[in-house]
Length: 284
Ligand code: GUN
Image (tube, rainbow, N blue to C red; front, side, top):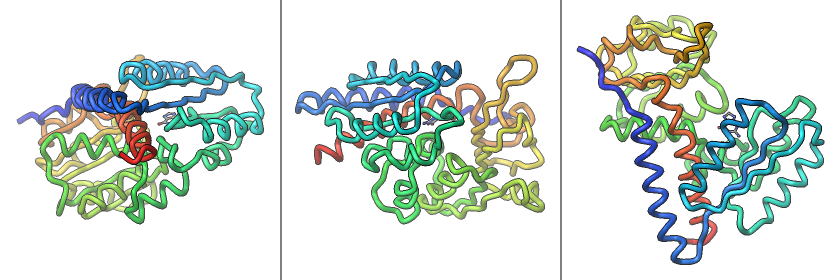
C-alpha cells in the first residue's frame, strides 16, 4: 500500500481562492487588505521569496508595498521604517524578510512590529497569545501544517502527535497548535533519547529538523500521517525533505511531498493572516 499524497499545492490554491473571494467582498465595503514586505540586502533566495509574496498579494487584490533597502541600512533606519508602517492605515500586515544582515538585531526589529500587524506571528506577544489561546495572528508555516492535516480529512483531537524539531518558527508553535486542536503532543529534538521508538508511536508525525532524509520508515507507525517541513538542497541540485519519502510512503497513510507539500502553504497562510488583520482592524 502506498500513502495518500497530501497535495499542498492544491490546498494552498484553494486557500488563496477563498482569500481572493473574501477580499472582493471586503473591497465592496471599502476595506482593502494591505501587506508591506521589507527586504534588506541582496540575498538571492530572499529576493525570490519576496517576489512571490508581492505577486500573490496582487492576485488577492491586496494593497501591496515592498520596501527594498540596501545591505548597509542601519538598524535605526529599519526601525524607523517599521514605525512608519505601524502608523500606516493602508498597511494591515508587516513582514520583514529574514535573515537580516548581521549588523541588525533581528529580535529588535521583530519586537518593533505592532502585534496587530505581526502577520509572521513571530513576536513574543503573538507567541504568548498562541500559548494562552487568545486571539492572535498565527505563524504561517505552523498554521499551514494544521490546515493540511485538517483538509486531508484527518481528525486531530485525541491523536498522539509527535513533533521532531523545536525551533521557534516551526517546532514549538506547531506543537502548541496541535495541543490547541486537542492532540496529545510530544516534542522530540537533538537530545531526545529513543526518538525512533517515540516517533513510531505517533498518529501524526511532523518533522522540521533541516536534515535531508533523516527520518526513515523505522520512525513511522503504520497508517501515520507524515508532515515533512524540511527543504534541503542535495549535492545533485534536487530538493529533499527531512523524511525519506520513498521509504515512508509505503508505511504512512498520508504524506506530504517535497516540493509541493508544506512549502506552498506558507504564502497562502500569509495572505489569510493579512486578510484577518484587515478584518480585525475594521471590526468585521
Ligand atoms: N525567511 C524565510 N521564511 C520566512 C518567513 O516565513 N518569514 C520571514 N519574515 N522571513 C522568512
